[in-house]
Image 1 (tube, rainbow, N blue to C red):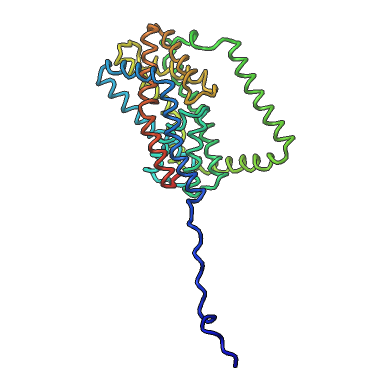
Image 2: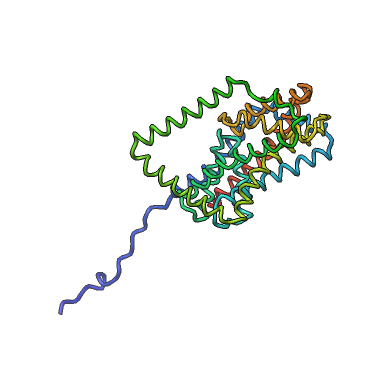
Length: 333
């Protein structure tokens, strides 16, 4: 019998391979965790004067009314988390959901048309095991319910305060209405043409609509989800307007709470379709206009709106970016 050499019987040692470098996914995650901080730094550098002036004006405000504004600012983040929970049947972890919405606020003020907030929420929902189609359908439902709920609240204020609210000075003229209708019609026509011509888009779009309708029917059989979705969507703009009312009172503005709420609803509804980061710019200008229409001096109205932006956007921006980076680093997003 042929003998096998001892050297051949030994299992050959595996040659040491090259040193493993960090994976592409890990490097991408690190880059994404740093990207929000870089964007915030660039934005703060370009808008530093407004941040400094707004903070200086807030320093002279009545501290108690300023505290009320801070409380309703925090309630706004909580309301956003409640509405997001109302748009999905699955129960989401409350702490992580609130943290994701706080982080989404920072992303929302960097990218236009709520793209940043939707992207953060989409990643969060996928991380909770919700398929992409259903997560996208929940964002569509959320985006549809918000303006409807805001319009309903606006109508309630019109019915409740018909004499106090100066509707004639705040309603846009016929040209603005025609422009809005024209833009809406163009968007619908372009979407219809794309779905008709591009067959690759037809099946995913129809699947998304079917999923959205199925989830919407299911959600509206769950009273807790209906209350969270519609009640939260109606409360959110009222809380935002209350922040402005509290800030205006702290700075000496004499308008009533109902007038400020209606002014905010009218301003944000009139320019809500303008794709600006977090509504900054168009909503600010419209809000100043509506406050002035009620008799507030231009300087005081401008100061109030700048203070509102400092409190709700610029001050939470860095903490929100840090939370966003932490959630990315921990693979929550």
